[in-house]
Length: 92
Image (cartoon, rainbow, N blue to C red; front, side, top):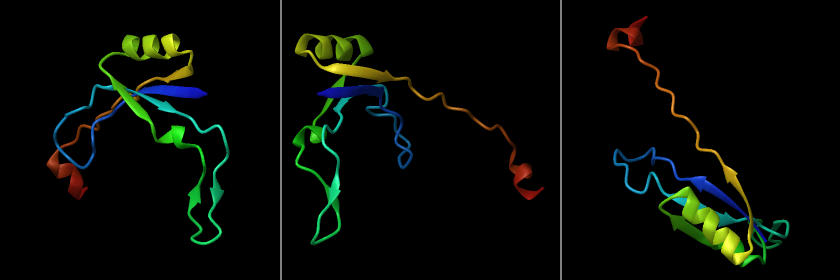
């Protein structure tokens, strides 16, 4: 049973930053996903992939994974880049 730990990013559809700094531990699927013959939706029998645990810091997430014997890898947070431009640049 493997897991990945990543930092939740800001929601692009809302202006608020609630839950943006949380660290999330999600389990990875141990079995491949397969299409359902009736509907065509992909799915699997592994319910562990539906589990998502949140922590305030990276150290708490790592500590939990080590205490429970879960193999994990940390995904570094993406750095936000801002493109500074003026309103007049829209009409060039």
